[in-house]
Length: 378
Ligand SMILES: Cc1cc2nc3c(=O)[nH]c(=O)nc-3n(C[C@H](O)[C@H](O)[C@H](O)COP(=O)(O)OP(=O)(O)OC[C@H]3O[C@@H](n4cnc5c(N)ncnc54)[C@H](O)[C@@H]3O)c2cc1C
Image (cartoon, rainbow, N blue to C red):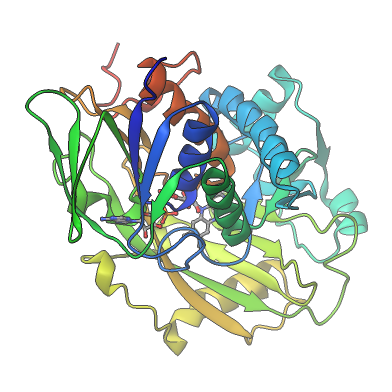
């Protein structure tokens, strides 16, 4: 009888819960650890909703990974019987001449993605809640969807446990130490486990566990703000979420409760988080200013007084591409980190890739451009 590979997953959040599911489904003995428990809102997975779209702005390399993620989201829902993702379409708006919008349009055509270009009149007719400045274009990505993040993390972790994975809740891993005879020691306050391979998915806490990553992960505080519409039915026509590319750099998602619209901002607005365990979760009135400005200019039918504001955190890399793969020089340690504000949609694909890397040592999915050490310039 073949002895199953023993794999530790450190951090049962967005990526870790999916990695646990795929690893145990493919025959591994899985031990997961989380400093809290699946579905908590202290890291990168909180805030009620996430956008799925078929094109990652300007990056054709992600298209096959998003295709894999799309299939894996369906599989997770079918296996768990849970509704985790709702097909809504996604509106992407930005300056027509900007490199990001040009790449989005060319990638959508080249890869024959189901999309529609809307001019200002058509946008005003179908989505009157949005103002489109002169020189801007709107693209409706019909494969776009809204994901429920907390429910997804809990569903993937629960499915993994149902299939036999063990999960140590409220158990921070203190150290990951390569063992002399192969494998890895996982050290917690409760003791030490020895495993064949460790998959490290500690999200915004990654630097405390792996302080010498080959590409740095900059942890930032991400504030979201929820606003009630005063006019127009934001929940009609599939209630598409939206992304406003440069210069506005924001996004919005009609809430699943049908009451408000969540607004979020991009990297340039996020403050550094020196210590993830001390994330400042209090949002001050002055932090509302930028949301009010964006509402006034782009969505004047939202009430600028929010009903809720919350702070989360996320790890960003310089290029925006996460680190996915074996740590250089460590055959038994796999890292997945630095998803730079865009990782949720990819998470079930990352779970499958974690299982490939841990069980087969390699993957047929195209992740070379995400190598932890980066890609050497040609
Ligand atoms: C507000 C916000 C909105 C976003 N919107 C979108 C979107 O619309 N679409 C999209 O695709 N992406 C979006 N993202 C990005 C996406 O949510 C993240 O890329 C993704 O959640 C990152 O997952 P992760 O597994 O790296 O981190 P997390 O989900 O935070 O998981 C890390 C886990 O590791 C655990 N952990 C940490 N240290 C230890 C330790 N020492 N021992 C044990 N456990 C540990 C933590 O408790 C946590 O559960 C958004 C992010 C934020 C913050």
